[in-house]
Image (cartoon, rainbow, N blue to C red; front, top):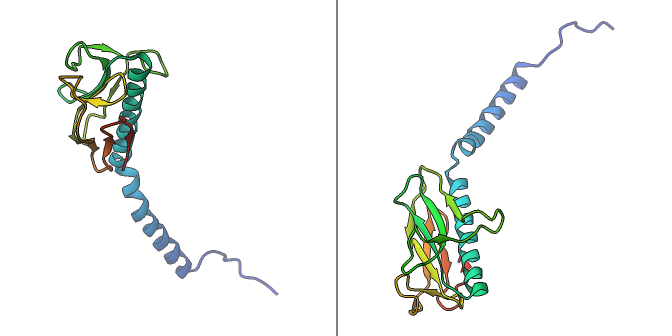
Length: 164
């Protein structure tokens, strides 16, 4: 009852393992190299939080607030400010709820395309109003799309921020 000293894998087992690893690599590798959808989701989440915070501050402090997506600077930035007249990036910034620093977030430098409204203003009731004239409540919902993500909407009457 002597066993053979040679032990190992058969050729068929090796081919099956290599084939399975190749298929897994083809599926997993694109997910690891393309980070754009995750970055877009992060920017959308940041913008959602900033809009909701600006609306809450407008209601709590009974004064107008603005959120400006500034694509004229590098890197692009989102700012929440107290408007001096019309919404300008040089206006006094709101404080960030988590750090107490000025509420300015930078956007990733490459690949994220924003479409739609890039400036939002909330009155003391939390309603979205005209950026230049705070007495005019907007007649339609405002939307902004971040890359390939679903659009972000601000309702015209209540200022509620949501993804439809």
